[in-house]
Image (tube, rainbow, N blue to C red; front, side, top):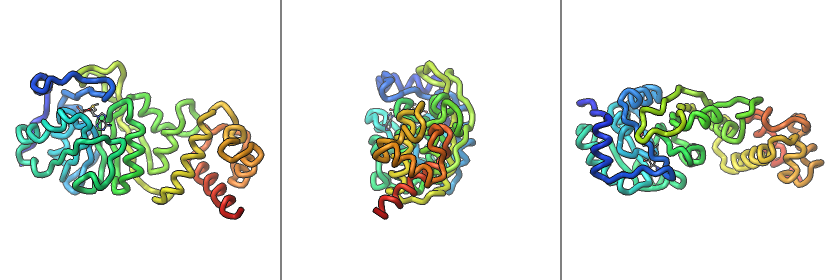
Length: 290
Ligand code: SAM
């Protein structure tokens, strides 16, 4: 197969002019016009011929073309119909040999379901729209259990938050929830100059290796995430105080925390996902026994 040609600044300019694209902040439209960055993301993702890649927000196709040179198949979900409609033509022009390995679905990644896609994806690789990056990532990890890995580009600060470990100021809801699905690591930094238009902030890569250590039960996940949300909604408070509403009363929260072997006087930012899972399981068992 002839390797795909990638989109440089001239190609991005031509495509944008043809489509009369005016990138919007609301849709997080910053397009990559640097082949080296695309190659780096594809290499870091580790995807190969056996993978069906889900790409969220293909835009003008910068990353899509890079992925088509390596992955077995790429299924892209793009919310902007004008961009989605142009993609098959871009693929046929820049990666003609890979046209039958490519599908695009016009839709919202925040609500997309397995039945909306022509194949079950094994890997998520995306330069995510910044304002919805975390909800999109968590939605996809929950709805697509076939995704074994994720490599996403997000704002550097969000990347730090996702990969944070317990104890720090940036550790919070996204850090715990991402770890519910697997191992989370920072996988590099990306400067502003590789985008058109240039964003104000740096970007970062985050990788998730799915382990499903806690299983795939949606009710277990919902209960765990409810405890996490409650703990961080008032992050300056102790767990005993923060979880009063979640448990019914602070006294009840203290009882459940002790039963889960968690010190009621510490703050949520010191707890790992395993602690939240134990707490939710203790609470579910207590509820079932009542
Ligand atoms: N992948 C392209 C690249 O690297 O040049 C574009 C990335 S740009 C940061 C984000 C893309 O996501 C845009 O094409 C935007 O239209 C699309 N998008 C925004 N919100 C979306 C959503 N909820 N679902 C699917 N695509 C979305």
